[in-house]
Length: 448
Image: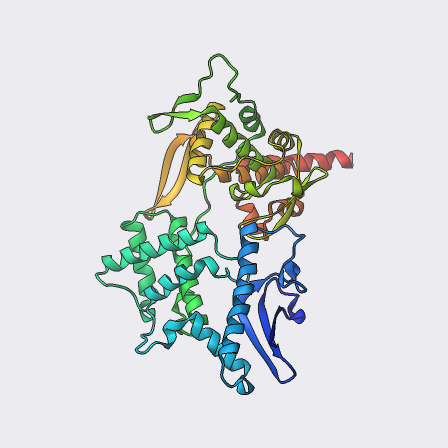
């Protein structure tokens, strides 16, 4: 009787992620191997049970998807083998071809036409929910897939602008790049960083197509991912204190079920006090822990021990350990260590602005951004610049200013490089100069 086992090569454990391999054995005469596209971090793989280890912090959906993928591939291998007429002549190459025909039937259809760049992107997005991101072994998130779709939509708009139905791989050259960037700047009037994101996706798709031998066009290597430092903000400790002290309880005589407030766009809206309180508390957790909005639902009693939160970041898969200081600990205790489920990200960002307005964070500021190829300056209230991600920048900036060791701080935020970390630090040139002067004076005093 044939048996099928999923395994990884132990010699490759030095890598972050490796391919799952399968071995079909039938007595002493048949032994077939298959190297799948399913990837896993060796430290997460339970070789005995051929699943993700039970006693590690791991995204629940990703765990289920991975385990299902293993079972599904084993079922496929089993069915192919059982339906083969002459099992004595089967080889591993036969198995690889048979699996490919099932997973990619379009390649074997009569009259199959080579893919264009657009048909490849369509297929890429369709398969994205079960496609590993780079070498991470993690499947693309819902937001990542949305970004793919938005970028593809912009490419289709560009094709219409050029009066063509689509682009072939051979069309993607440096002239395509310069024309596309000009289109994004002048027709779409997008910011530099948004344009950079769309160029990044073009390069990603071409790189994947080369791996699949669909094209040998390497001209995209000269494409530059346009970007500029984001003119974002971080909040101060006094501002965090003002947010923390907001009272959203319903026991006050002047508190109605809804709170009516004139917001920045001039419209009057109604908000439930309870919802504003949930949003405020979630935002403060981000500000004091450095967690992303997407990581808040992963906080439970199970991953809090001795005033430390251990969590695997949803975006990167990085496991971080975060000390729970007084304010985040008080908030988590308020919810029995399980924060309320967050609302949609867009709605959450809208209400964060409302919360910050209520806290008096209304100073008039300038925001600089290159849009449509032109440097523009916008004047708006400080609360209007606040979003969920302001919390993560606030945490990094606050402790950096206090002189906390940068390497240790990066271990808490989960940043891999000093370059990416420093993009989060919102310190003015004046503050840098004051920090150096303070350090110099401390050195002088020690030498006296």
